[in-house]
Length: 560
Image 1 (cartoon, rainbow, N blue to C red):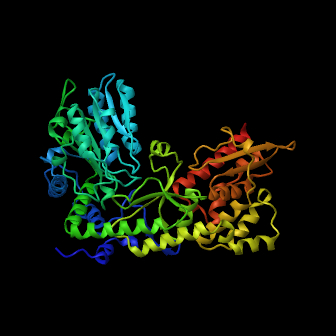
Image 2 (cartoon, one colour):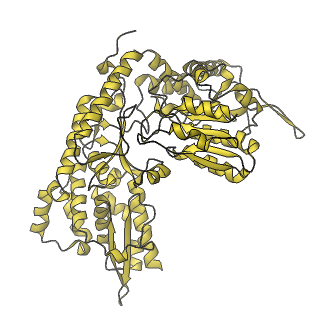
Image 3 (cartoon, rainbow, N blue to C red):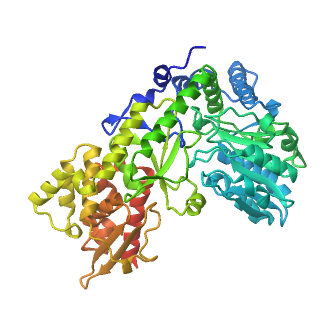
């Protein structure tokens, strides 16, 4: 095995050569999903080109070939986790479905009123909501483990929450926001003391740690392929064989049966009992390719490089005066979550995107954690071994630039252009004004600056108008909108947001609807408008949802 080479490793990921918004892509959103090496992409394509057939169900050559590759991947996962048997490896769509399977198959049939399910404040929604549903179905109760200042589950308080009534403890190996390794060995030990089961969410750990389920002695362990260089839509549930054999099927259909009659159905053996229907065969095989890819790497060298990258990034981010990490201490894996004083998280993420940097902002599917930490959201940078020190430097440079300037200085040319054009105040801008302004902005970087400048021109909404009734639901940031109808049936709008980028988008939208009748507002094609501005393709799904929420709020107000 060759010594780890960062250059060689990075070259395996073709997407990293792409330009985004006319800048080199800097992909720092690996906690959401990692990029895929060539061998995984080719494996997925090769299945459809050379082996496309259903598994287990036919006697012809293509099916035999597909089945062999499919079950070979199961063997690889067994080896990866050091499970006792292949029957303990169940294919699912991902960590989310794996948790739902356990919650419904084990939880719904085993939990009783008064039983306790123990979670932690740092859990992803996928390890909270399924347990809330099953608790409501069974009468069980949920208890929540607190965290220490470093963001880890507090060891000293375990037995204050895990006790005689605890039936299962479900915690993340590593939080997708905090990046610290939880003391799962201690948690499993205490759970066993009270004869409670344990489920470990390994979605963030699997790409960074060696996981030995036999050594951990957990009852269930779940992870998703797409967070460890594999394809989306495929995940793993590891469960102890004796438990899986006792659990009823999660779904019913083909493959999970032995015999079917209208009088009685008998179920298949493990693992097929939990794999109803035609599975994601290409995804399973591509996961096998991802595991082969990782086996070929110098693991020690990869970990050494990733650790050095993590330490370097932590040190560089720590040098930014306005940056505040959401918890104390350096993370265990390269996940960095923070806020920037005086700047909304979505403004920072959008500004970074305009220069090709992919990060994540918001609550990261951990709303209870955000409430626990008394914040509304944060910025998250999550790195992988294909990221470089130079990329870290570029991101830090951009963050420093954003914290040292305000939106006014980001677009001096825009200020001059607006002054020369003698544009009116933002609440009186017209569609033609907006189209003229954006026609001169060719790149997303320049369009983003224009949005931010328009946000500066948007007049603030009075505090008395920022009420639950004026709040726009569906925006990840806070945004408010009020409307007044004139005697001539035309509507005037005022709006505000705590995010500058949303203030800018509000200005653009209000230019199209202000001083218009309800009929004119409903007739206006907002999609065509944003397309002509060159913005439609640049709106992220969350930002696009925000725009739609604004438009829906306007239509609601004029319809009332």
